[in-house]
Amino acid sequence: MRRDDSIPAIATQLRYAQLCRKHLEEKGILDTRFRLQKLADATVALPVLSARVPELTLGVLQHSVAPGSTCTITHIQSPVPSKKSSVRSSQQQLEEALRGLVELRGEVWSEELGRDLPQSWKRHGDLAILGEATFRQPVWKILEPELWETVASTLGVKRVARMGRVSTDRFRTPTVTLLQGQDGWVQHVDNGIRYEFDVTKCMFSSGNITEKLRIASFNCSGETVVDLYAGIGYFTLPYLVHAGASFVHACEWNPHAVNALRRNLELNGAAQRCQVHQGDNRQLSLCDVADRVNLGLIPSSEEGWPTACRLLKCETGGVLHIHQNVSSHPQKPDPALLLQNLCLQEVCDPSSPAGKAACDSDTADSRESALGLHCRDSMRITVKAEWQAWSKAAACRIAALLLEIKGQPWRTHVLHMEHVKSYAPHVDHIVLDLECRPT
Image (cartoon, rainbow, N blue to C red; front, side, top):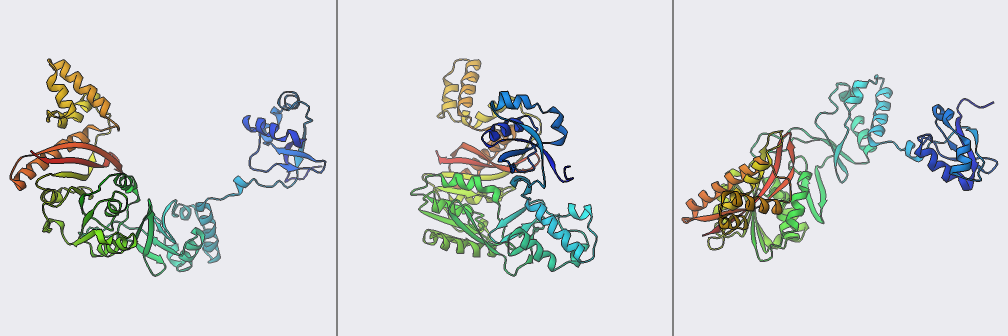
């Protein structure tokens, strides 16, 4: 007589066990919740799903899958869970720990409380930041401070904070509340660069990592870079540490971010090649110094465009890296319109490959063909028509500002558009690399 906690299995000799296991797994018959088990007679028992037992054909196993084997149906007493099934996710561990705390304090656990728990969190060293829409039920307040001690212990951290909405002050200060621990300073490492900042006072966007890596790939040897809206050094440090910029002027008006920026420059051994300018960059007294200007503010850095134009070197010009959130329509753009928009900026310049190909063509059709071929060859990413429309408008606006500020015509040329991340539905954070040269 078999015990109630037993499960069905196929028993076979040890040397045939893996052949049979692979066959049963491919057929969806193997019960992967439990481990294979060695029996007293030196055979191996492979657990199978009870509902699939009627489908078993021992003859197939013995003659086709593992010729020479002997296969019998048996039962495993007190089966051992497999390693995979016994591993609980962090969310499951957190729910289990908090359920125990709730019941220990005489409260009633409910599905509503389960839905109020975080499904993900950001981690900076020994500090975890929970999302805003968590722990909203009144019962959690009753369980403090044990609640946050339990959360910290379960997540394997010492400090816990909760993210709120970014404030509407001019510094866009994050409303992060420290729930467990006394100090909000953390360290984050990206691509070998150390960033330290106070999470309760400074923003840190991990979604910008692709742009930081792109900047790190630049060759800025011999260049002077100005980083407007520098923050804690998100882009300032990649320019100094990896891109090899000779000197960087970092401009930032949030005193808490400036404090972290100075600290990070020292941490990464770059303080001697950077000057920090604290205050509104629109009031910056610098001009005619930059080979490259970074405008890393979203949703728009447009207020800084006149400053960026003043900063570019009058004799040689330079490149602007302009960040912007661009809205787009959900429907797929017309490919013909896409190609047309992609090359509008280049066609305006007869010295560009597209402009030269178009100008050298005899007919409108051949010009369009030459233009289209060039565009297709030069496209490296999927570019939305709305991005192209915005980039063309931005290039024209920058050219007008340069004429006004520098007192002579300048040529603007779209070098590249980089998609950083999706900011919201149908809203993309992009970077426009705009070359600006005096004519």
